[in-house]
Image 1 (cartoon, rainbow, N blue to C red):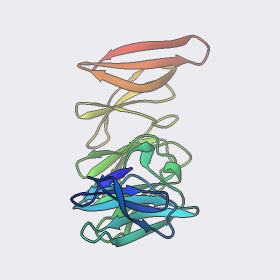
Image 2 (image 1 turned 120 degrees about the vertical axis):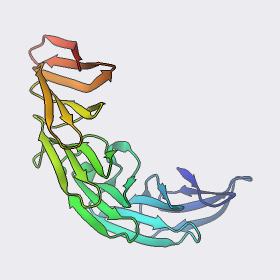
Image 3 (image 1 turned 90 degrees about the vertical axis):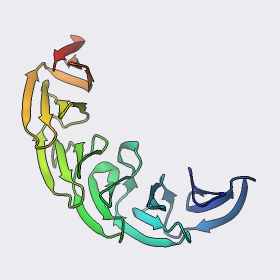
Image 4 (image 1 turned 30 degrees about the vertical axis):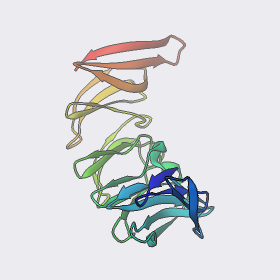
Amino acid sequence: MSRPWRDGELVCSARDGLIYVDIARGVVLRRRSLPGIDRLFPPVEFEGDLLFPYANRASGGLVRFASGTGDVAWKCVRRGQITPTKGHRLLVHERTAVLSVNGGSSLVGVDVDTGETRWSFRAQWLYTPLEVDGSSIIFGTAGGHGRHLRRHDVRTGETEWAVPMKGGCPYYARCGECLVAGDWNGVLRSVRATDGVVVDEARVGPHLAGPPLVVGDRIYVLRWSPDGAGTALLALDV
């Protein structure tokens, strides 16, 4: 992984530090070791600085590098294994970075100005990528602490609404102002994104597999039968 840092230089993350490369010549200009960091994940540029999620054996967190000097502006440390949310890059919105801890069992909101933890939410488990909607984030969860399609205030972490989904919410699709999601009981719901109100639902069971596909005024879903009857592709009018 590499990212521009200053004019003529490229910064690349090594296993436990950074390597600065002259872009024109391909020559390593210098190396920087980062104690307490075993792995750096792809960074996000914020106001010219770089925000790197990182991990080590027992903990992880987020570190901010100042663009002018390359020095560490702050370092946020959390217990537990840090991983990018569902393989995506770090989400930064409303001056809050959202970290995924222990494979998505928890989400942590970090103030990008100070490095302080603003909030922590036990997702258990985060199934979907995080979607930005206004000043909020939307995501699907499963596990012992909730099987929901959820919306949270990104700055405070406060739950704005949560719609229960049998078996959890591993995927959903946008359909205008609504979110379309199916559950393990074969119920396809249309949920208004602003307030979480279920405006429509269709029982197409027994089980829905794969994300809904919205094309024009139709929604396509795969239905799976555990009794060996196979799968079927269904088309529903919006």
